[in-house]
Length: 84
Image 1: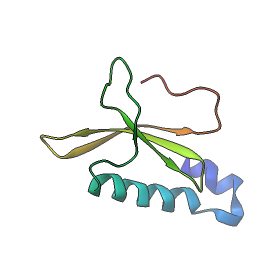
Image 2 (image 1 turned 180 degrees about the vertical axis):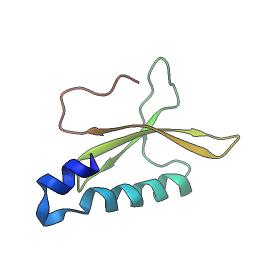
Image 3 (image 1 turned 120 degrees about the vertical axis):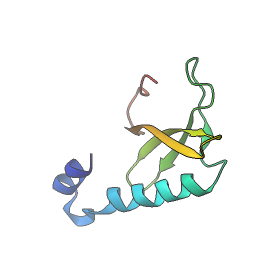
C-alpha cells in the first residue's frame, strides 16, 4: 500500500506512511483506541480510521502480553470489509 501511495499521490507521497506510523503509536499507547468491530471469530477486534489516507486499521490487543496485532489495513471507501 505504501508503494502504491508513493506512485499515485506524488503531492502527498509520505502521507500514508506518516499517518500509519502515528496510528501505530496511538494504538500502542491508548488502550481503548479505535472502535469495537467484533466478528464471530474475533469478538475483541477493533478498527481505527486514518482520515488522511482513508484507510481503516483493523487490530487486536493482547492484554496479557500488551501486544497489538494489526490484522489488516483496508480502504474505507470499499463496499466490503476484510474477512477477519
